[in-house]
Amino acid sequence: MRQFNKAYGLLAAGLLLVEILIARFAHDGFVRPYAGDFLATIFLYCLLKSVWPASAWQVALAALLVSYAIEGAQLAHLLQWLGWQHSRMARLLLGSQFEWGDMLAYTLAAALVLLVEGWWAAAPGYPSARKRAK
Image (tube, rainbow, N blue to C red):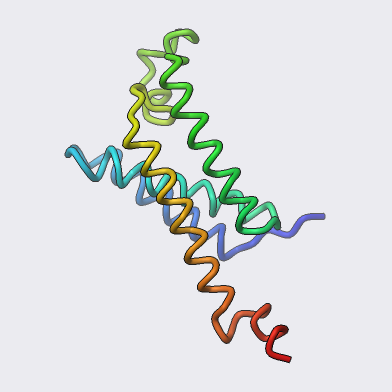
């Protein structure tokens, strides 16, 4: 049976709260469209990592591909095809307009995740670092 990783689960919950606050209160040209997308990929990473004990590279790639797929669905006008274009929840979760800047935000978020995970794994107190030191 798979073990739930509480640390990543708590990070995902915190990021979800931040995303909800952004969606509710940020109505600008940067935080909502770009910082929100940046954090969404990190949220997906933490959510996946909380239940999937794969390597950081595998989970980051999965989160990035899901992010790209959602953006691709916007390019293909999936909401219109499904008749959901008037659904506020569908537009909030899946977005409604393709933007290349979003793709950049997703990519930068995945890169940051890998950078932080690499740094964290090399930290002296991290279990795998202790194994390497012996």
